[in-house]
Image (cartoon, rainbow, N blue to C red; front, side, top):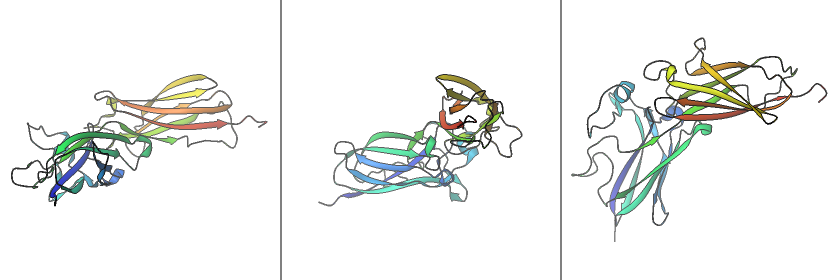
Amino acid sequence: MSGETTKIMVRVIARDGKFLGDDVGGALVTIRDVRTGELLASGLTTGGSGPTQGIMQTPKTRNQPIPTENPPVNNACFFEATLSLEAPRLVEISALGPLAAQQSANRVSATTWVWPGLGIAPGQTPGGPVRQDGFLLEIPGLVVQVLSPPQHYLPFKPNPQTPIPISANVTMMCGCPINAVPWPYQDFQVGASIRHNGKTTDLALTFDTQAPAPSQFTVNWTPGDYGIFEITVWAFQTSTGNTGVDHTSVNLLTPSA
C-alpha cells in the first residue's frame, strides 16, 4: 500500500522577534511519530529572517499569516519535509536554535495530527491550509554572549584593584539588535552575578551608547581579591519575560603562585 505525499513546512520564530534565519545559524527541525518515536524527517531551516515592519509593526487580524516575504522574493527561513503517509499520524515537531549561538539555544516542540495528503504547507492540496507561514514554532529567550572578560581570563600581572570591564552582546533569538524601535534597550535588564569564595556579588550592566555596534551592555568591576571568579551574565526582557544567560571566569593568581 503506497502512502500519500504529505508536506509539512516548519518555520521557527523568536518570541517578540523575527524568524531564525541564516544569519543566526537557523534552527534544527525534527519530526517524529509520537507513539513510536520514529524519526520521520529532520533538517535545518534556511533563508532570511523576514520583513521587520511586516512582522513587528503591522497589526494582524484572525487567520492572517505572519508576513514571510521581502518582495520580490520569499525571505523567511523554513524547513519543508515531504512525508509518505498511509494513515494519520500524531507527530511531534521540534526545533533547536539559534545554532550560531549554542550558549543561548533553546528547544521547543509541539504535537499535531497530520492526515495523509493534507499537509501543513501552502498550496499543498485543494481544501488545505492557505496560510503562507506554515507550522510555526516560537522560541523564547535572548541571545547573550559575554564579550569581556574572555573565558578563563588570566592577566599577566594580576592586580585585584584594577577594574575589569564586563561586557555582553544581547540580542533577540533571531539576532535582531537591541537599540531603539522595535526593541528599545530600556525594555531590558542585564546583570552579572559574580561568585568567589562562597560569596556572590551582583552588578547591573548598562547599555553602551558609545559602542561601535548596538546590543552592547557593560560595567566596570573591581575584584578586590585574588582567586577564581565565576561570572554569570544574564539578560531579561521586561515586556515578555524573555531571558538569556552566558558564563565566563576570571583567574587572578596570587604573586606567589
